[in-house]
Image (cartoon, rainbow, N blue to C red):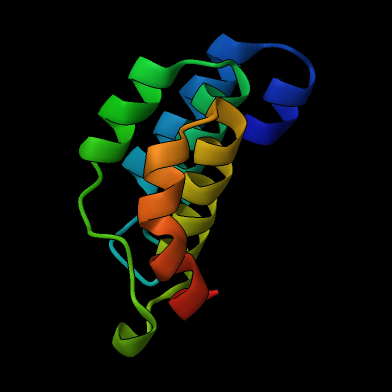
Amino acid sequence: LSAAHLSLGDVGAALHHADEATRLMPASGWTGLGEAARLHVLAATGDRDGYAAARDSAPFALPSLADNPPAGQLFYLHAVLRAVAELGLVEEATALYPVAVNVC
């Protein structure tokens, strides 16, 4: 729902549904989908400060391939990688490159 609202230009509803996904998702292998949706909205709207705050408040670290990460963490990693590209965060992208190469 978050992505659908974002595509319609309703940022408030997009953030609401991303946060609801995070709140309603029981701890599982899918944990991280709501957090990923929030990052996607913040990056798409150019909100660097919101992105940094959301990234720093994630309840888990970025995965590594050695950890055999669950799907939710992979979706979250993808959202982080996409956000740094959309927001032009070159230093963070450079730091994330080894993670991306080893996981993706």
